[in-house]
Length: 127
Image 1: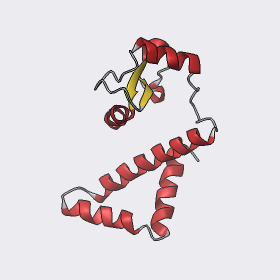
Image 2 (image 1 turned 90 degrees about the vertical axis):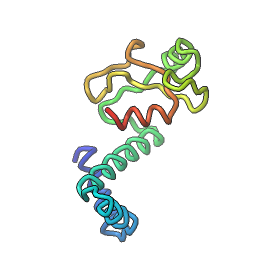
Image 3 (image 1 turned 60 degrees about the vertical axis):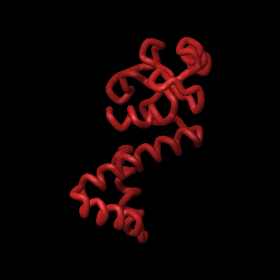
Image 4 (image 1 turned 135 degrees about the horizontal axis):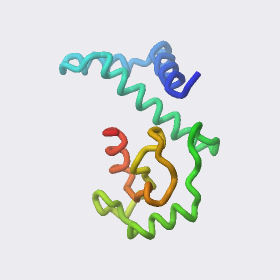
């Protein structure tokens, strides 16, 4: 089973196990004119991100991803002035792929930039 299939499976297991919050979100969203499918798609995306985060925290390699070398990570932070290139924040910094790995991007320095976690999350939601 691929990662997205696994995330969707986890989402529906949560529903089957009494995931009242998800049911509430779907009902509340439909009252606001958002379709149930759109809500479930958004939740599935969140579940996928959660799954990748858990894999990263566990130390297991994320399928299809090569870890960024620590020396390269610090070189990118140094190059970018230890600040988020979007908002200028100097806290909660992360390395972002300008051209996403999922679309063929790689870990070359010219494809990496420093973003704070908030800006990186917002950018990820737009990609």
